[in-house]
Image 1 (cartoon, helix red, strand yellow):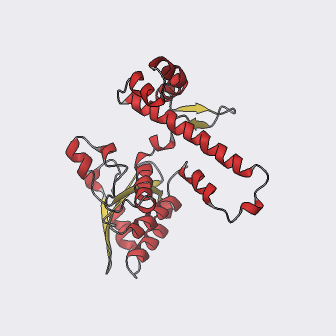
Image 2 (image 1 turned 135 degrees about the horizontal axis):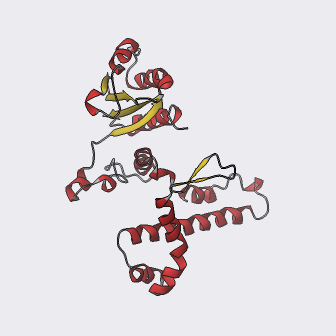
Image 3 (image 1 turned 45 degrees about the vertical axis):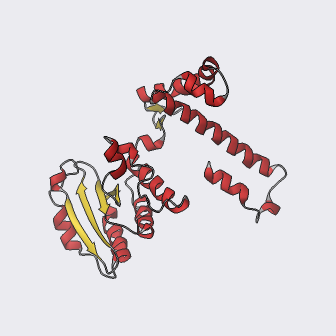
Length: 246
């Protein structure tokens, strides 16, 4: 929704917009805002807010609030029961839940970085994810390990991934042999078996932990220690480019 709002601010290309073009963009924004509101109601109901609690902020009674958002709540409950549906061909699965529900680590990493870069939350590296993974009030403040980014990539992409990462941290070549030996016998489901590869530069030092996913052509990767927002942005881009997504 914020991206849609941003586009309405730019005037440089107004001359190329057809009649009614700005109305189209504004209408898209209102539709996205309606979806945000519906998602907020689902969230509030999941955390125990009553119909009266919700209705008072919408200026309607509890019954009217329930009638308005019952379809959204029903869709959410149905998606939790069956996260996928088949497309018209009957062969391809289509997500019914938000994509973030299927890869929360990736979604949180992107949102944390977005909050830091676009909202100016420089003092908080986990502005989005801290409370999501908290077990108690103290965890909500401390959160998981600071500056830790995780994801998965195809095994065939490991070498170019690490080569680019190495260049970001230090002007040196990748030690391919050490990495190949270190990955032997690793298992993504066994934390003690993960291989750690340290990259130490003059300014930045990061630790890369990785392991094979048994029976699959992918590697699980966790990168810790990237203090700089610029370096984290580059790592995030690498994760996207070499990801193991289908």
